Image 1 (cartoon, helix red, strand yellow):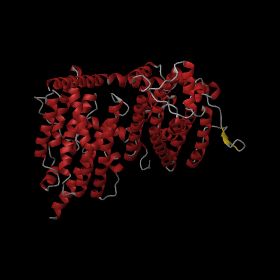
Image 2 (tube, chains in turn cyan, purple):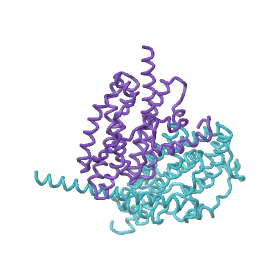
Image 3 (tube, one colour):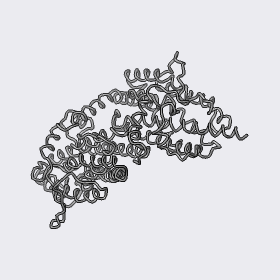
Image 4 (cartoon, helix red, strand yellow):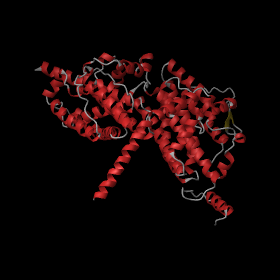
Length: 318
Length: 258
């Protein structure tokens, strides 16, 4: 079976039979490239995503909130780590991936290019951003590439805890003073549309969707997931006593779904292109952190090398 | 008799609050690294230590509230006291600086913390013994982490060694306070509730020397001035900024639930 056509057919048959593809197996180059792009983008999003939340970590208004938020952000670092490891099984190194992030070649989720302006944003991010992430990620637990699927199982378990902590922050605010309720509503107003953008462009404008669905890297289309997210969130928003910043939102009994307004796609593409409110800030911060850590990484390597030499020479003597 | 008991109780409250404050403030400093670590693994490790310390702080605040008996919560102590009322060690409030400073600060603290808790586990004060017992396991990991990094950076590259020397020089004067008993601590040591600080000092010094030797580093000589005052509320300039930031939301909207 050395013929490329046969290899591709065998590969697609395995995908169609819901079998997992593992690192050492043959796979089409485009499949490998798509996965590297998607997994690394996901890993970068976890790492960059730590920044908007750390912005309020040192101002968390109670010890309990502080501890929970710290644990949450730490989980995100952990997710980044599993995902970089999953990407490494495809023949790239973490350093290469980070270089691509720092040069602007690799993307990360645009949602993290919006600023966190009040404590309520910690609630909105946990609840809505992590909620949207779960919606995108749960199907990935069944994605065709084994290491990615297994990483996502761990990620998804933790994300649902994140979403709960976010919603709890919102509940506390909505049960609180008038100022707190306003803070919650303001956060919802600012995050709602960017969160809907997290599902990606409309299906007919999504360049990578078709092949990803065929290869079962993706399981549902962007628009399907976006609709599912809106349907799930509206009752939660009503329960909080907040309103959605969308005058076109209404229940459509015929479809059995909520109708909602059009995302501002111009804004979406501007942020993707690097022109969002915090693109520059986030990337500069990451680059600075990476540069400042260089001497530490070098020292750790140098020390490990010295230890290796010592071990070898002591074996030699023995 | 009654007065002596009151005096011991007051001392116990002050000391418990001081332990709570030290662990909280160090946890806060470590949490400032979150998202900024030199590699993801170490970012996560520092958050882990911060989480352990905040957990320990909460146990101490809880005990302080019981001792005071005024119906206060942990957040009352944390968010509504000023710098002069905080009783943390000066070492804990020192700025993160570069990673070498953070590692050295942690190493000095852990080397004291682990042995302090080890003895405190057998304190006749059952609450203190229980808190110490729980935290001891966690701190065994902290001291392993900080010692390993002292060695790795000390015996890494020329640059890392130099950075470690600078950090040791800067932080050494703040290490003395760990073993300098306040009046309140002396009362509790006499009552057998707290460990003997003289013995702790010997063990601490042995630990420091053994790790620094492996790291090919030296204890800074000619810097024997001890900076103290934190445990009685006289702080460095850094603490009030930390508090201003930490307390900002609570203070802007006092009396609300979050």
